Image (cartoon, rainbow, N blue to C red):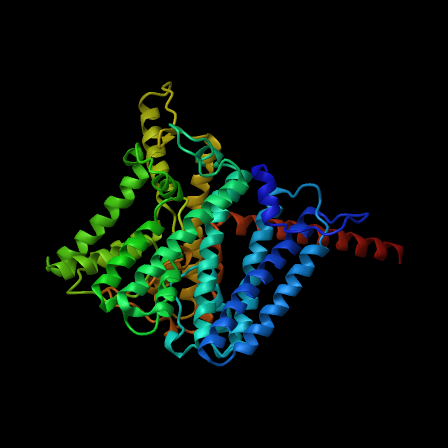
Length: 512
């Protein structure tokens, strides 16, 4: 199966029986994205129903009926849609955006039905937090039923998996960036993504064992199988949702979380090579060095600011640093006094995020490294106009289209942050708070901290303030491009239809 066929198949499902007339590419991709969204919510609803059944908590019947209904609707729709011979790349991205929006609306409504949230608007906010793995939840986890906790954590895990599939298996097959995808093995190493289908299998080969290993490790600390599962799903997906109680009082739990968050921020290519025990050449990756040294540097800054060099201080610093850079965003309280530089450094680390091809959000280190090298190249060209200076990342020459895409991504990321911060400021927040909220929403991280490092509670934010953060969460989680491509396509189709409608009206007026 080719990469493009896999990308189409992932957004397509089953086509059913042939008919005389197939659907258009955009209509088919949108319908199939809607079906995939229904199936994703349905599966998590059934898992929640099974959990409520085991522990005898309320709303198990609601989850069960909703899960069955959503699975049936999604399956029927998958069989009803008549796919064209090939979907356009823009339509595939649009279908994936439709899938995420479907999850947000359907899961949000189900949260209202199961009394996890008091209103549909808050349901939208919480479901968006879950599927985009954004650590800005305002829900009281201890007030949720066991099934609702599993449903919320399961959506996070689903969002993390979707992020890997989108970034590693789909987007590189549809546009610029193919030259940086691990498609050809070197020095006896098997490639991560020789094709889209194989990439998906390799992603599951890493994501599932990592999730199970964290679950087992947390459970063995004595926190229990159920709480260990919730925490593992939150760590591996970089969702940052708290679990009942305060599990991070245990130093062992903190160290396990530090390892899990650090691995979640590492590129899947690096994890794939580690799984093959092919570690030669890894340290030559500037992106990996930046990631490790950035985590270490932020931790040292935290220790220096607290003026405490004990082992407990080292552990807390490593926890906060790995939580920020991986965009997991657990709301850890500051230890010791923090100078104003520390919250700013944490905000910058969250905005940048982890390595490209990882579950973490943010701008990512690979585009940042590329832009630094691009700036250096342009400066050298001013001195030596005829010098040929190819840009390389990880020893791989980078295509000019890929460089252009990274520059555009930088602009779009900044534009999303500025637009969102202005919208939040209009709801009554100060410019500083609005900027922090916008950065964390776009980077799908958290928590938003005051200048003294105290985490803010999103439950204290107004409903409108939370709602305006949802588009930034969705755009940030989907690397901005798919959402903007979808919005552009919808705008173009709408403009065309309005133009045709106007022509018909003018024609009828002339006739009359």
